[in-house]
Length: 343
Image 1 (spheres, rainbow, N blue to C red):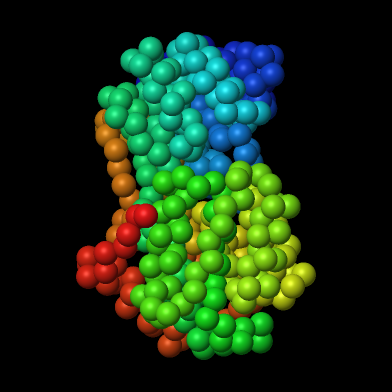
Image 2: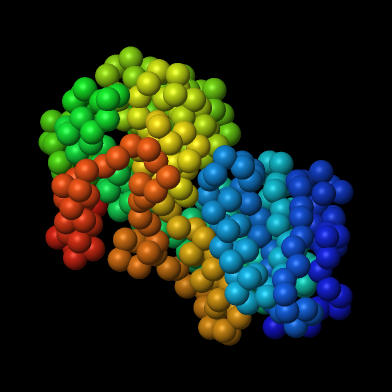
């Protein structure tokens, strides 16, 4: 661990200050409990930023938990654009002040491969994407497995008409942020889980085109509802707030993503698929604290707590018989009896 020349306070680090001065984004610092000898961590979010209860917020939760448990200090930066991400990465790496720099999201891969190739002694962690560089530890979640579970839940709930908003429709929907391999893991798992329960189910799929466009997501959701979808799942970041607005206005059910979004609209959000980037961030920092860091790719699924789903905080009550069926499906996925597709 590097020795810090001064305690981290509410002031920005030199790297973060440079990033802001260049117009690259918003930075913030947090102080741990252990003083100057604690590891110093940097985390760079995607351009979607914090808010909307999405995966940037989840990654930050993992860093905050590490700060409480290990006394680490950290700086966080919200880039204004994808182009700014490489500048911020370079500023942090060149400062030589960080024991680990965490980069969130697939959109940072190209920039990170460039920067990490130059600063080969700097340790990086990449969340929700992969890199083959020796100084980049990649942490990815099997999004398809968590999505499989909520796809099965959606059909079982619809068949059972567990809520007054459900009529037994044979149509459900999925809204993705962008049409790329990562988001398609969500779509593939959701559809596979639905078809596992009912091979004749109709699954509507569309993409917003971005992760911070609730207006377009709301339009897609309304269109899906007009076509008969009474339960719609999203993997679209902050765009998903538009889905929840549509659900409240039109009176259908929705499923959140990444972290527990149920409390946003508990009468209209039945469940949330959990993509536990908080655990990924926490494990990455643990490897620095315990000096076990290796630049390896780690893939986490239902078996090891990388993904899951939750009903907590929703006012939609799922009957015990459906929960029991879901537990059976979960075990079948974990055992390998059910193979969940990625695309």
